[in-house]
Length: 251
Image (cartoon, rainbow, N blue to C red; front, side):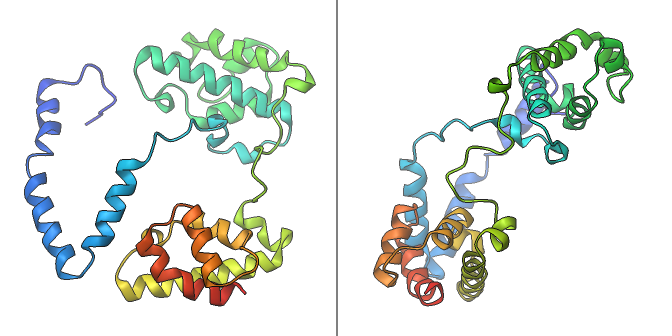
């Protein structure tokens, strides 16, 4: 069924509520399984981390997650994506519907690339030529006009203002030593994960591993790796399993 429909029928709501009917029983079964394999304390630490975690910070430039945005090459095109993304988001909030159902990401990127000079040029593009989009044509074209009217210093940068750590796909070019550290560290984590029957990303979060490898502590030893992992948010059970083998391959 389409859960973005509004209003949700009563029988759908009842169906959703019944999803929790067996959770207490499932909790008891899983607690027993954790106890059998000696992972109860691991789970306790994970639950406590979730309990104490504050709300996630607002996502910076959420429009940059638009699918296909990597095809764009200019700041003006990125501005068009940004304005269309926020126009769509506001409209979706008004309609209480998923933004992608109103206008797919592909249409946003196509419009940014085409840079239509007139509303009728926009209407000639795929998706925008449909009856539903034509009814909202003024809304979408206004967003494009807003982007077109921005001064150069108001345009978004081509890349997100990051904290100095590039995407891992660029490590080999930017810092071959860091790329080699990451490859070795991933191998260690994968081996440990298999040994302890946990998912690698549960043994140590991917972002924690990347940050450790991109900027390892100095001087590098097991104790400094422990401190760095703790500062990055790793739990004690994770640090206990990973600090020594990671320090061995990062040096």
